[in-house]
Image: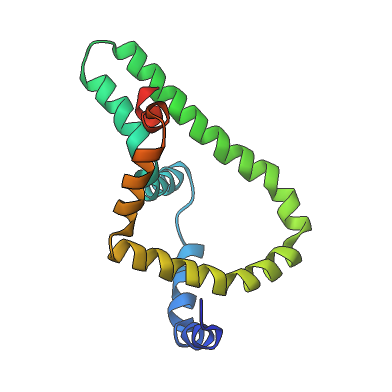
Length: 152
């Protein structure tokens, strides 16, 4: 991403592999089972993001005290996630089609920026700066905001 020339050479070198992958995707099964598999993969990718909230709902259910409330929390969570995905899919489809050229141009300009962001985040994680920032945030933020993700 940071070095466009190197990226182009990598794209040329991996073109054969990309063509094979495209052919397999085109030949992939369709139907409810395939959609379920795609959703399961999306869930696996989203796990780090939704983990704390889903973990709280599962912890609530595991106590066995109020299973109805736990089911309601999990159903509300699932409904919220699904409604956001559907709203984005249907709401942005037309806008993206109308603005495709502008989005492609933006993506070309954004690639080097994102490359540097990825490098900076990777370096910060490698050197443990995320823990320093987390500790600083815990000292500064009010308790209600820190506990917000598990207090619902």
